[in-house]
Length: 140
Image 1: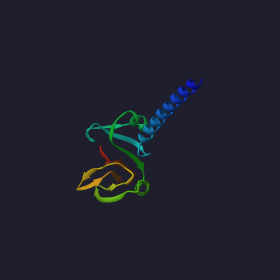
Image 2: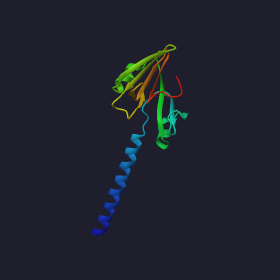
Image 3: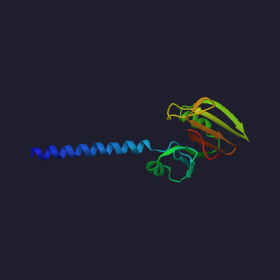
Image 4: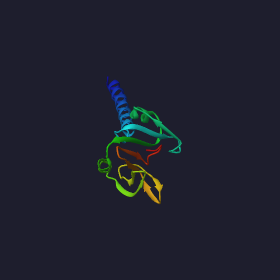
């Protein structure tokens, strides 16, 4: 009986460890943004292929991604900047769209852009805001 209980608890401990690992992996694969029009840049080069999806969690759970972006209606710049505690590194304006290139300590490694590390890109137009990490690929 004693051998059975040790074996049972050993197997239960292994199953509990595996369940914790699966849960941690699933949490790490959560999409960064909660907007619409979700896009992922995939393959080794983040601009090599853009995939649009309506189920970002499932796509990110089973695929390796190099970057991701989403769209929000209206001007969501301040809410996104505050959520990610991002510092604006530089901005540019083109065709009525203001691009904020930021660095967030909550996000992973970024890319070098104009000699600075950027890991959050927020583009604000008249009717919508696009956000991407490390930057928005595929256009606004």
